[in-house]
Picture 1 (cartoon, rainbow, N blue to C red):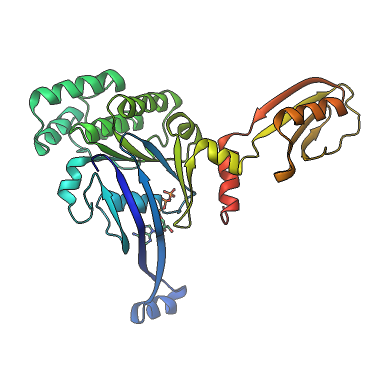
Picture 2 (cartoon, rainbow, N blue to C red):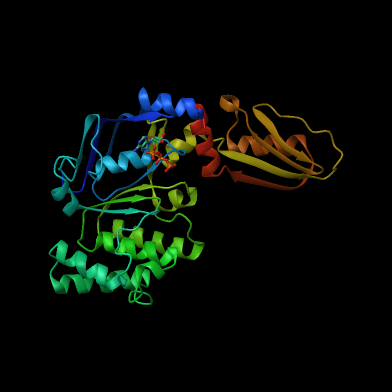
Length: 331
Ligand SMILES: Nc1ncnc2c1ncn2[C@@H]1O[C@H](COP(=O)(O)OP(=O)(O)OP(=O)(O)O)[C@@H](O)[C@H]1O
């Protein structure tokens, strides 16, 4: 379907040669190399609907980049199948390239020695974009990403934030329906991060693009994604909305109180654990399935202790994801 991403049982195994330690080991490795297989991605199935932004999350080495490389046609899967906007990316690389845009935060696809605007012009010619369309799109991107302040500079002299903003514009100049972003805001300052997020939100909501995003930044996930797919050790461990994930893995709340008497003895309450206790400051959290609802928790604390201040916090997404990784195997 136009603009959708369909992934069915996708797997990719890498075969590498192990180097044995020491000089003798090196000689033995040369004569008789030991090959090991690594299942970077194992039997992953998920969909992204047209016009949806999905965050693909997982700890380092989970298999996110390998998945994106298969969907952009850079890598061929060992088994399984994928379709991006109806095209099998690794079988029809050129057709796929016309439908997609991709940004890898750690690398640039721009010409290092050329000013940014010349890179844009080369891409316009590669993708046969009519001149008036090119100009209109550049104007739109400039408004959102403030490109004109640096687009006459050579790419090699750009700051990281300027370079990634240029890469984003370059990836979208041919108006692709599907966009892959592998850690696009890594290393950026908060102001530029926010600008890039605004730009992405605009591209999804106003331009209807489908986006698959990987990031380790949970603020980004909360700001941009409604749905996430979580992978760990190459396997899909979770596919759901942020709300579903919070419900399933959240310790979803914490009650923080300041006691009137800093020396009062403090202990856990029914269905609640004592998370922290320093002087008058005490934090209670939910104790797994026996935890009371939030309003009940507040009531229990107030009835049991005399407090001068009380606050109820939602656990942040970082904690929820950590719990999800742990429960899904290990970190
Ligand atoms: N070309 C390759 N040859 C051998 N092993 C590889 C290759 N590319 C990736 N791997 C291995 O596959 C696993 C998954 O790597 P991948 O880069 O997809 O993870 P990731 O989730 O993107 O991690 P990160 O968050 O650190 O970027 C890792 O164990 C990695 O070492």
